[in-house]
Each structure stands twice: as C-alpha cells, then as structure tokens.
Amino acid sequence: MKKAFGLISAIIILLLIATLMVVVVKFSFISVKHTSDSYLQQRAQLFMQSAIENAVLAIEGYERNSSNKCLENIYFTDENQRFEANITVLKYYCYNGNCPCDNTVSIATDKSHGYVLMNVVVESNVSNPRVNKKIRLERVTLQRP
Image 1 (cartoon, rainbow, N blue to C red):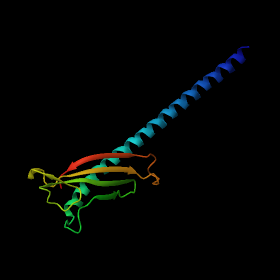
Image 2 (image 1 turned 60 degrees about the vertical axis):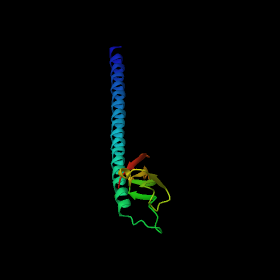
Image 3 (image 1 turned 120 degrees about the horizontal axis):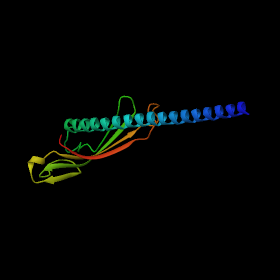
Image 4 (image 1 turned 90 degrees about the horizontal axis):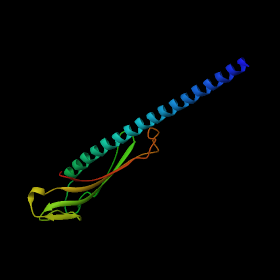
C-alpha cells in the first residue's frame, strides 16, 4: 500500500510541475509578443514623424504655379517595406489667398502664411514577413514648410 501511495504522489508532483512549466511558457510567449508589438508601434510612430518631415520638405521644394497647382497627396514607404505613409494636404493657409492651390484658406495675418494642414496615415505592410500585426496610425497636424 505504501508503494502505490508513493507512485500516486510522484505522478501528482510531475503533473503539478508540468502545469507550472506550461504557465511559465505561456507568460513568456505573451511577454515576447508584447515586446514585439510595442517595438513595431514605436517604429511606426518614428516613421510617421519622418514622413511628416519629408512631406514638409517636398512641399517646400515643389514648384507652384498656375499649371502645377499644389501638392495634395504624398506617399512614402520605409526602406524595409514595413510601413506605408499616405499624406493628404487638407488646407494651405496663405496670406490674402495668393496661392494657386485649390484648397487654399485665406488668412489675415502674414505670421501664419505658408502653414499646411495635413492628414497623415501610417499603416503596416502585413505582406512583409517582419510584420506580424496590422498597425494603423492617423494624425492631423499643422506644419509650416
């Protein structure tokens, strides 16, 4: 009777240890996934800031005249093809409305001349094997080129 009791207690201890190991593996998997997701989120935010700065540079360097009008849509992708940025220029703020743009807002002070209101959307490219989560960030920002 004592040998059977020892065998049963050994099996119970093994089951408890196995259950504990399963819980540890699950928590470590959750931790790794959380770290990966937060890394991708931070990379997307940094790419968004970079896309905003590049859009401002593109607007500054764009030749505006009566035939070219103004930039309205700008598209960027990062070097590793992980993220895509679609930037839509919603409004150009011009002093006395003297811009050839279709979406110009006339303002009364020259201190705000040249501001642009942009809608920036950054999305992850899920076809890339390095991206395992769909990320979509959107920001409306007022910038001065």
